[in-house]
Image 1: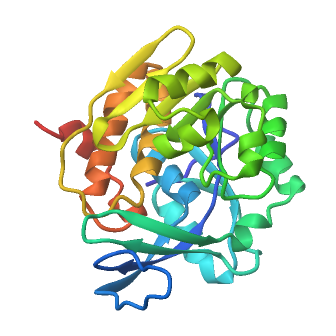
Image 2: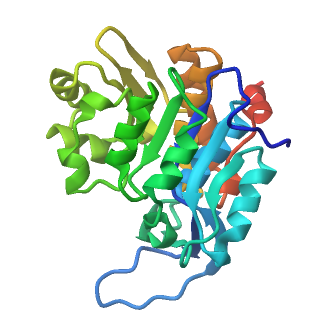
Length: 305
């Protein structure tokens, strides 16, 4: 793929302020319990981080994306991987301390649990953010997760540039719960995150509670095997899940987010975005690994034919 320039794109574009991790993935019979020691059936090292996964998903879906983030000398290969996948890395610094790390347990059922050390992901500076934002403006999309430092300050800076903000508030913490979501355009949630932010458990009630407080939100609530619900002040769209055998759900949500935003940039059609993102994430869970499991657009388009 050819790398794009963030400053020379006429079409709507995406800046992803996102995490870059080295994933250590342990395949286990069951998640380890308190006081228990178990043996892994297999251990693999993969590229990861919600930010990296989402940037690759956006690019493989056919949209233009620039990545803002930081790694240490041990993670230069992550920046190279982004380049190989058509992501602009002008604003990926390789001068951090240790690269962010994730320890991932994957059970026989394909479920996962993850422990993260932020490392260089927590060392991004205001100057680096300002430089990256200089190539963006009104109508462009600023994507952010909660795996990098100062996400709310970054959101405020992007809004001043006239950008739309897409937030994946994972991992949920007290800072996210206090965040003013009136600043957000697209809010990507799973059911656990939805309950944490709304106090509700039923999907439609989660959306209703959030929209009552933040009327301008465009909520994308993923429901696992029960599909996905999109809701804003005027529109409600449901897309059913695509049944597949799950072997690793690690990058499913990141694939969904990336494909949804890419399709909104390319076509602006919510229904198409939900369908493409649902198919893409279903392909992802049928494969092992994170970034390497994300499908290309041609695979998504050919699915089921």
